[in-house]
Length: 562
Picture 1 (tube, one colour):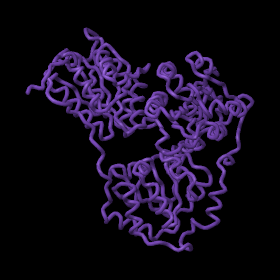
Picture 2 (tube, rainbow, N blue to C red):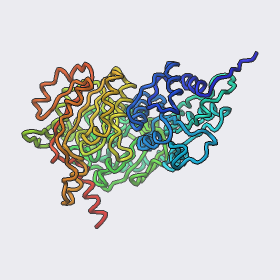
Picture 3 (tube, rainbow, N blue to C red):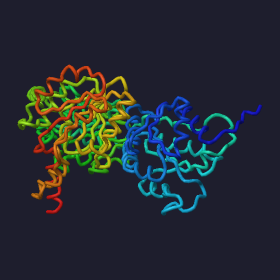
Picture 4 (cartoon, rainbow, N blue to C red):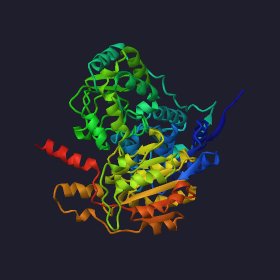
């Protein structure tokens, strides 16, 4: 029986993507991808159009993060590919499953860089490869399906894959046999650690009287919470997280909150007493380590599924390669229990100190007649916003608000600073919101990043996306302002006029409000508690308040330059 048929490549590839279970793609169509995009949409793979290529790719990454599924972006060739390079590089560092499908010049079309005759001429393969992206090109109609399958397989491992579709290959007819070749590769079984590394870690922990366990997003995704809490109970440890692991231990009596640049004073004081640090699924980057100042000079045991991740930022004394939950269970079995007298971190005095700490009293609010302290704003928002929420952060000085906004689990928090850039938060938040439409998504963004990406206000209204924008408006590039001020340089070029963004958002169908005091915010309690439609809060925040990492970075630089 002959099961073959002849169809254009764009149709076959669209069907293969549908067969993967993909039901949403993001993009900005161009003449070289328009046919492919509308074909996908016609098959039931909804095409969500963005207003900029960077935002389309960020949407796909946010969607992949929120769902664990494949996030797909479809954008054009040449200038469109160049436009999206920022988000593509950032997404490649995030660890989410992302496939970006680009249009490309016809195979055999001649020079790829130059002015005319192809004004969109651009060597995408070379540029994307130089940027560190895994790139695939559908070089012929006969091999296009397999090339798509290869790209999907690469994306399945948690690294962005780029697929170039030349225009003449897309439009060519091809004889097709059998079902789709493309498939997502499932994650492997959680791996236990080698006994030798468990023995080394156990030997070090047996000498420790005041250990601290630090968990990152990797530990949460491994389902290690209960095992880590049991381990803390057994060895007398306190619990902390990285920023991305935030609130994993929320409410636990041994919880000290976030380690590093987002720590509160009580957490720092307790960590200063530690004599060993046991890290699960966290990278120990500059912010987690406060540029080297957050952890005393004590042994560090680092657990990760990938050996190359251990010691990447901070030297570890013992490296344990394995799944966080499995390793925690192995250590539970290997370590003996301790008497109460052998667990000084678990004394009634220590636990009372932890239980009595109030983050809202950890700073002295610095409001002005026309601005609000961003920390106090965060504390107030935490009680007004729906408890079940996703929180997505752009990047900048305003990240100082992060410790004060809680999330249900670490998976409900999304940071977008892997490329140390601003302007990726808006697109990412839209992808997260599309992936989790039943839970409101809160985008926390500075005025600089917002002005870069505010065209997506229209996308929110068009797609009816449940979004609350908390615009941290200090009328400045806040990080640069403090960077210059700390070096006693003029700050004028980092400061901008006070723009009333609420009026702009209202024009796009938002409920929009200007916040200059906590009373302004409290008056919106009913609106924020049960949001009905998109909301924007233009929060005029005191630009004098620097995030802790700004001072830490300056001190680090001073140490580096002696």
